[in-house]
Image (cartoon, rainbow, N blue to C red; front, top):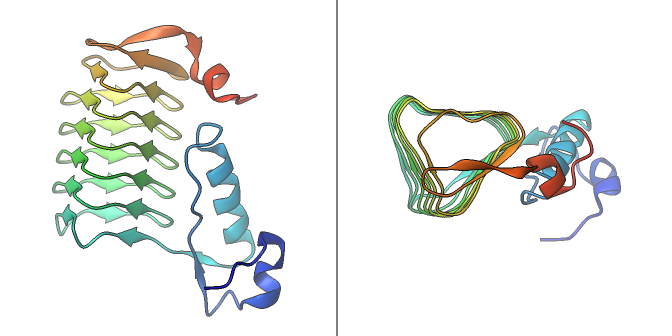
Length: 178
């Protein structure tokens, strides 16, 4: 497949005939991927999503656009996944959980049932979020952290049980504004 500069995209490809996937990681707490995702839509392209055939996704799951769901994810019934979300390998998303837009979930995280993951969050490797918990927008859940209480916006949580650090997620990821 050819590599095309972002600025030339609509000049070389008809937006009515082509779809685009914005393949950017969690840079700047997902802000870079979100900006490019919005620009792709402004250019008239429909964002594409991909779900690995090696993942188990219940038939009533809702998945937004520009999502990439890697292999070995288990996504249980009535889960809602927003747009511009990346679920790396081996995660478990419990029933009726809602994942907001622009989330990046690293590998082997466990999210129990009835949880809410806010917009722009980063969920670290091997972290766990217990039933009915709300992870506020712009949170970072560190590797191996165990969330047993609702979180506060813009914080970094580490440990078992997870506790906020003194440094905000904005400072950690170099984001100027909330």
